[in-house]
Image (cartoon, rainbow, N blue to C red; front, side, top):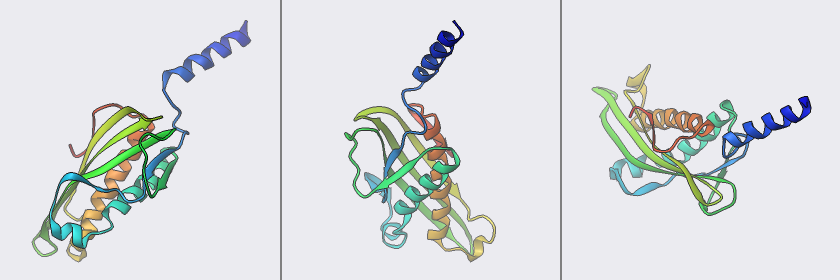
Length: 169
């Protein structure tokens, strides 16, 4: 009887979530800008690594939250397994090292499991540059925003909920 109870408990706990956090999540290695992204040309031209940084930080923080994030050059949301489509939707770079930084980046994402939507999020992070902001360039401060957003996304992947708002939203 005890063995049967253990098996029943195991089956019940296993069915509570659609998937295990140990299952890998595929993310594009260079997060693109959304088609309708409101990002100034100077940010697109000068801060060319924001999408790569967001992907790398999501992977890095995924390890902290026991989420296996795998990066790929091309993303297929219809693929088998878990796939997270992320797009940068906005980035603003006001101010500078002399008058003070006022930067933010926002993104949206949709998690798919075997081609079916599981959950989505909107995220935003802002920064004034932190310690020694006067010695940082605009792209460096925007890099801080995508680092924080990568942490938010990785934490969300641990227990994704639909229509979640992450970060400074």
